[in-house]
Amino acid sequence: MSTPYYKLDGKIPVPSDLMEWSAMIESGRQVLWQDEVGDQLVSTIFLGLDHNFSSTGPPVLFETMIFREGEGEYQERTTTWELAREQHLAALARALFTDTSI
Image (cartoon, rainbow, N blue to C red; front, top):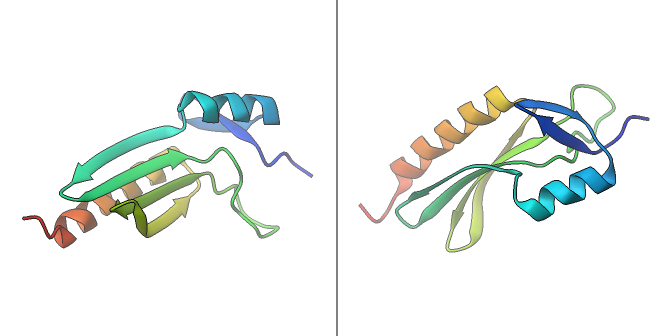
């Protein structure tokens, strides 16, 4: 069985161990992009913990969420840095479209 823990080597996820993963979380290095849109926060992070709960496919390691007043209203997960960036930009567009403060 492969490790559920990963760290980033540049933009590439590589297998890690619990100690390296914990150090990443404690340091805040998992936060990739955060943008405020009115009363919403769009946040994309590197989870570093595989969220692919099936036995097939690549590890799901990135998560984009939209928060309003601290509550998550939208969530998507993906497998690569590039897809995470696209997801973040799509979430920004979604937040702009639903911004009630404009």
